[in-house]
Amino acid sequence: MKLGVMANCFGDKSWEDACKAASEAGLKAIEPGCGGFVGKAHCNPAELLKDKDAIKKFKEAAGKNGLEISALSCHGNALHPQKSVSDEHTADLVAAIELASKIGVKVINDFAGCPGAGKDAKYPNWITCPWPTYFGDSVKWQWGKKVVPFWKEMVKKAKKAGVKFGFEMHPGDVVYNTEALLKLREEVGAEEISCNFDPSHLFWQGMDPIVCIKKLGNTIVHVHALLAKSP
Picture 1 (cartoon, one colour):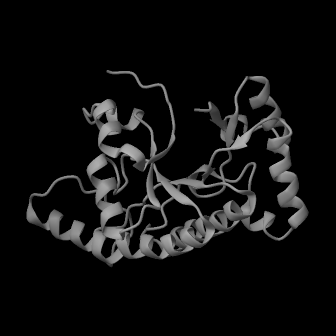
Picture 2 (picture 1 turned 90 degrees about the vertical axis):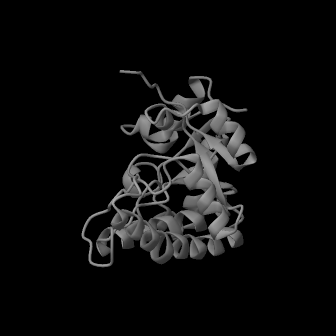
């Protein structure tokens, strides 16, 4: 196991200085944000992909500081019902997949996303209860028309690039617990649907992280650790 840090912690520093700071702290890995909600302070895949030398320098900045790029963070909502958001986050993800293949990164951490309740929705609708029954109808639409078809397409790209998606189970996302993550993996039918395990998002649901780890097993490809305090 290697301890690392999300580069966004060093948002006021350049990529090289962020890598240096992480190394001086005794860390062995770093995870740059590359789109979606986390931004592109240190890594803009679409721009890097235009310049082979820039890609080389980006990778070397981590290597010369003794760091592995453990994953690319592209936490977004490519399923957002507003096309401007979904298009932007999808483009970020596609570019991140291509960049990962060129720098030898095997994991892209992301959210599975959250669509609206139906085709005319303007905002994401996070549904967590089965009754009244219209909630269940909306969930079926979300998964059948949006979630599964989208990730099947992304898995095709991931397979070619040799990467896996580390989904973070998060409130407001269709994948917010172990059951939902394993459901997505089964319905997409691909081991590229994997887990970035962050127990801080499970405590508030009354979930035991140890039980979750045992359930998820080798589905876990990356881990985040945050401070979480009970009320």
